[in-house]
Length: 217
Image (cartoon, rainbow, N blue to C red; front, top):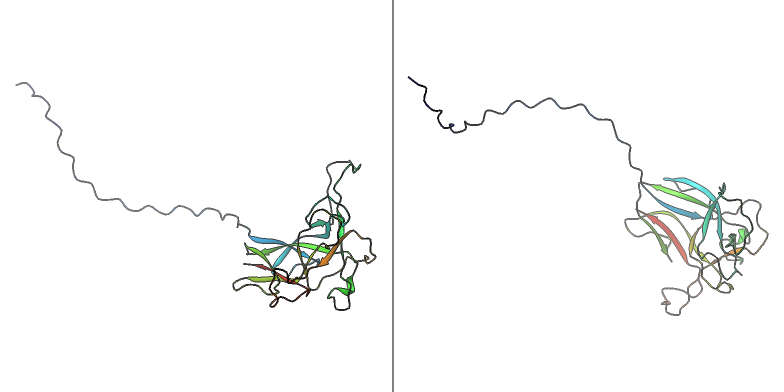
């Protein structure tokens, strides 16, 4: 006789047994290690402490003490500058001058380098990611590592500049730029002291030199 109509599809069958796990793929090439480090300036020195690499060394610079304008920052100028322009007219230019130690006094820790020029070095502290300059302390807080310590410096209160200079922490074992030492009154670095006006004395002491520490973690 004739073939009958096609019947409705049957219900789906049960899932089969999972196959075996394939072999692992080949190991990819090793990626480049990410570099890390806290970068800071070590004022007054030309070398970095143990555990830190030299990025570059140079000379400390800032605006001249009797110029009412110019930068308020201190800069560590490299010893090998590069230029993009031949313009040297200095029309209303903001000139930089070398920082000179103004630290005379029989009890000054820097008396032997008074009126010499200040060197500097930019350092990269390997494996560190945070940086802190602690004023009025020569040790670091718990959990922080000290890179160097010394004394706070800025610009004299008698400067005729309209602005203010940033504070730098100058190394306790500061050095002079070789061959410098004659006062040229460029950008003086003066040691900072505490008053007792709004600052508690004790524990602070009037006009005593303020220390500092540069710390990383």
